[in-house]
Image (tube, rainbow, N blue to C red; front, top):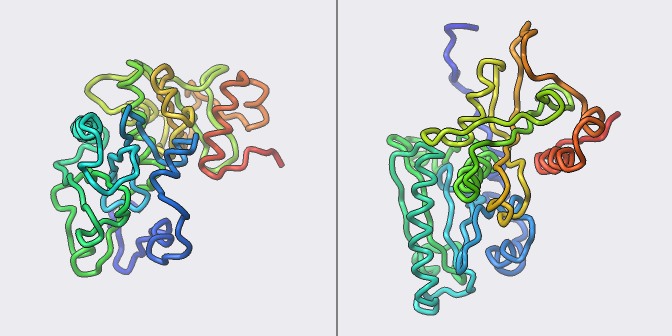
Amino acid sequence: MTGEPRFLPGARLWTPWRMAYVGGGEREPGCVFCNALAGEDDATSLIVHRGEHSFAIMNLFPYNTGHLMIVPYSHTHQLMALSQDARAEMTELTATFCDVLQLAMNCDGFNTGMNLGSAAGAGIANHLHHHIVPRWTGDTNFMPIIGGTKVLPELVAATYAKVRAEVARRKSGAGTIDVVLFAPDQPGLYVAGDDLPAISLTDDMPAWKSAVTAFSAEASVCGVLGWAGRASTVSDETKWPALALSCSPRAGNGSSPYRWISFEQASALLTDSRYGQVREAANRLGMDTSEP
């Protein structure tokens, strides 16, 4: 109801994705960084960039939204064990991703650095890594100070998509972003004509915001769900970035250029490549594309 406070006294802040970290449980065997690097699905591993000597990966249990790490390919805990080229690339990637995060997340500052060794607070001590933590004025409040709890405003999958879209836009030089526009209240998606919507990008706005803003006039609610492009970051050199959005059209908007279709209709309408993109994005988000 209009005029009511958005957050009511006693309201709960649910952060279920943190339970795997808080509750402990079985640890992943081996080194989590080496395991991620060995996989082919960068989107699932949260890798946003692979360089020549190091890579950038989102933190699955972030201190703050957008927390990522620059990690060398070499499995070592000693800086001097890395080549000079590897150390130089890590420094350059730190600068690059501060710039990427500044645009994608609109943050006010950063904490960057390394914890070398368990005694220094390293959670993964055997494989050194450089943290980049976005900060906003006022983001340290009573929750982490008194309650020992950090509340994050969005899921890691959505943050990953925002950052990856920005990286892919820069690598490919794309002026357009593809959008898989899912309906939140029914299994299916929205299309523009006979294809997925494609939105033009501008240099002064992050890619994800350009996509969301393009649908703001058509939708009562629109937000980023996750990445909808190819799994491997290698494809970012040549492919447009792609996002999965959730969109609820405004009631009574009969002039919208977007129409809803079921997944079954999408499989018949879209090209095999396009429908494969839809299914891959849906599977990442845990959606069932099978028809009843």
